[in-house]
Length: 309
Image (tube, rainbow, N blue to C red; front, side):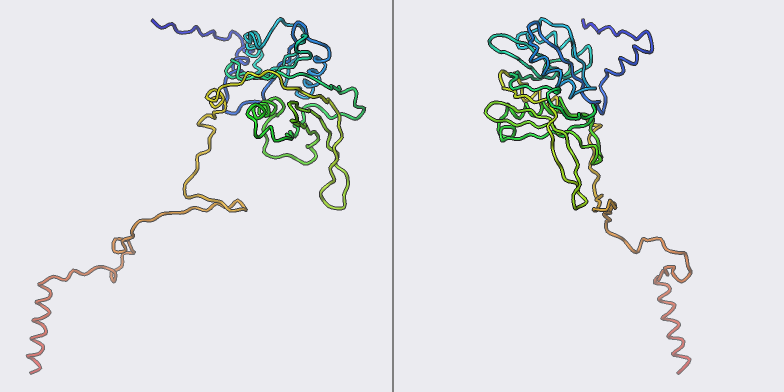
């Protein structure tokens, strides 16, 4: 006997909008993130997480209360928070004698843990320590990854993918040059990832292309890679799967040039010219030559010859 799950219908328009917002979409919105702190979180790590929240905002929600959570032992409370606030990304800070100033970044898939990585925060400098004009929130940053580890190491390639999910924003088709104001740099060296944030300055030059200068605006921190819990290859492949409606079907025999002009190729079979319908004219009608007409022509020729003789 199969038991069908009970479907709770919304009682108001507001609850109906909230349910529709959580439903899967063909083109997903920018991923939200929640920021949590543990029971023994240090101020040093929490300040670092608050600066990362400012880089992520307005696509994030920070929780001020302490939570008795150990993600690597029990991830269920964080999964519950992610489902409640419809946020597939999370950050969590904690502190203990064995792992001081702990920062955990992770993500979920279908409200279950996909993967997470634990970092140790070192050499942290906050936004307030950089006395320079900051950029406005909500800008789309440029992400730069330096180091061969991001390409040759499986763990660091997953960390790179996690950083892209965490800090990228809406996917756009066109970007104006003046909108490129922020650069987030990640450099992997000796088991650490150096995170730096820069502001892009466009200076005058003798050409049409402006001269680019980068000024560090913070935050600045070194993330020492500690523990990790990565998804299996099958689960990660399933999470990256795109719906069939999103895939663009290739149209056969249609091409375009550099100027956007479309060209079509038509394949024709064997053409029977005799069967082509032409204009109905008396001169184009086919005459049927029968044996009787041939005999009449022969007789007419014979009579003509006899008369001449």
